[in-house]
Length: 64
Image (tube, rainbow, N blue to C red; front, top):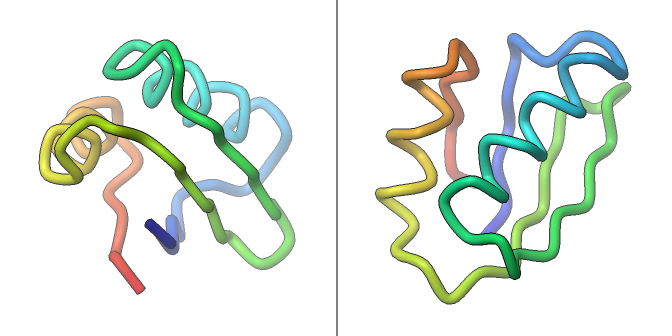
């Protein structure tokens, strides 16, 4: 799943986004490009659960 997260502006944000995704699925693979505000997630968890968790933590995502 590819996401754009406009609220992700720094390395700290990227770490928070990664932690949020890993809380939902500890086995998820997360690749982040902070400059482009893009996140690629490989997870067996439902996409909606990840999107909801990100929004709750202040990082609303748009699926691309």
